[in-house]
Amino acid sequence: VTLFDLRGHGRSSMPQDGYSPSQMAEDLQELMDAVALDKVHLVGHSFGGSVVLQFALRYPERVQSLILADVRLKLWQPHQRPRNWSHWHKLQPTLEKVGIYLDENETEAGYRLLIEMARLQLRTSNGDSSLPKLFSRLYPQGDSQRTAKRFLKLIETTTACQDVTADETLTVEALQSLKIPTLAIYGEQSPNQPTAKALSQCWTHAHLQFVPQAGHFFPVSQPEKFIHAVEDFWNSISPIRPDLS
Image (cartoon, rainbow, N blue to C red):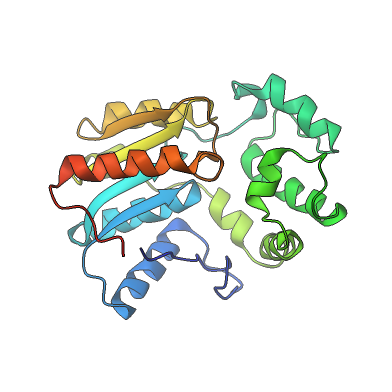
């Protein structure tokens, strides 16, 4: 398995600009060339899913299969307002209890939530039991301050926020041209349900699956379910599983 730190993330460098899915798809192409990966199974969660989708559209001959985990596509879901989240009435009091207040009409609430979570992490000591469990999964114990600081630096000193929230260039026609084996997997309680339903209608060849009692971050909150779904999908499309060594 090759894990790709997007530019500005993890241990990758943090340039001033170039954070659109199309630019990062080119980063991925250069990475694959550098490490001699010819044709691969691509897996992307959330914004990472937009990146691998752009890659698949540009270089379909280099993709064996595509797994999109809870990806929101602005083609069908231009806004993400808290008032439209199925679990907002439960999430809102939990967030406000720890000092995070989201406007229910915020059009990019997903990104706003991540920013406010990072800011709260910097105001809170590691191991604070009052924080929601999700925080400890996104900001690992012992490294939470560094992770939060790096994320806020990305948002505040680069064009990342503008780039990832810009209008999408995808079209239904372009998506329908892709015939690569695809798994679209979403959390049952995810705010990205409109994208999931639209994808199932656009891609008749794709397999749509929902993770029960899970939200947007199920790959980290319920990793076993995600891994099993991925393996089952790979086994269904090929008698020879990918080399996971």
